[in-house]
Amino acid sequence: MEFDLAAIDPAPLFALSLVPYLFFLHWAGQCRSISKTALLGFQLTLLFVVVTIAAAVIALRCCDAELVDIDALHGGAEAFLTLGNAVLVWGLLRQTPEEVNNS
Image (spheres, helix red, strand yellow):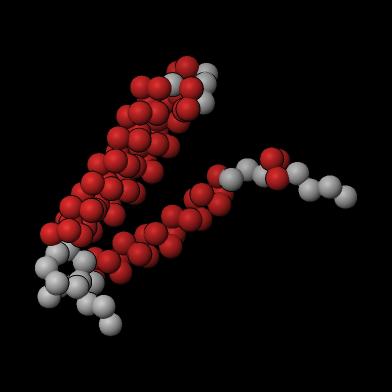
């Protein structure tokens, strides 16, 4: 019996992966050692996921193509990831050593 990995639909796994990330965002919101700016960066990463899903649906419905084939939509979605990463790094770099708890 041969097992074909290409036949597996990754969408349910992708949706399930959002659950621990939402728990992480909740925990990060309660944590005092993560700056508000860094938390915003993590939240923008979630916004990137939402924008990417919307862009993929638009590409499929309007252009009958995959998201990777429509450069404007793909680049626009990836811009949200870049924004989220930039805000996250900015928030982490702005933290003072007193705010960081390494224990």
